[in-house]
Length: 113
Length: 114
Image 1 (cartoon, rainbow over the protein chains, first blue to last red):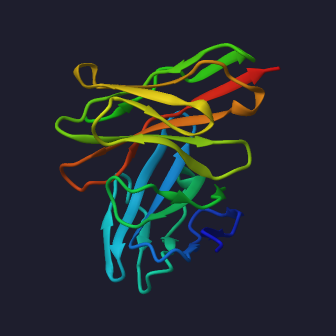
Image 2 (image 1 turned 90 degrees about the horizontal axis):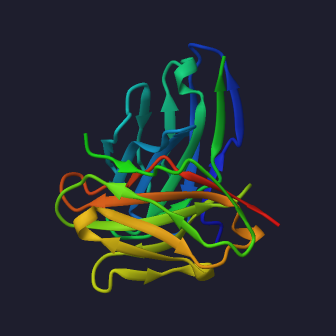
């Protein structure tokens, strides 16, 4: 049982490049979410999904796209990277949203030059 | 704007000292409350949570938190910290209205000096 996995661990991008951050979970969780963590700002919700085929925006969705074709996978796409997207990205999953414990991945550290 | 506030950004304590980390939120109505911890080099993990009932909840590793509804607060406490408690602590609130998501505070970095 690997829990929540994320790849890559670290990535450097140039402004304007696109990339996909991968997230997978093997706990059959319905709810998955992406957060970014910035110094002094805590974790902010980017996008979330309540099940395969269903996604919605969080607090800071601009510049990011998501899709959920399977229960297990929830990739986050940066369409055209900007320096403001330099951050640490965390994927999380839980049985449902609300009071359920969220399980976090190890994070992806992204640097946009 | 609705928010979760953690006023202590960095706390430095000696081993055996008592700890209290503040958390205040501005969401109205019923909320679920959480404390998550991120030890150096590890994933965020749940420390404790409160949904209803006894406002004093106990979590792992000797931590506890008290929900005071009138103060919109959910402060984290530990009577005697250890070096291994060095970590970043995040308060999180799940308001049961709206999108029913989880909103995090800015985090408090705790450094425990041996």
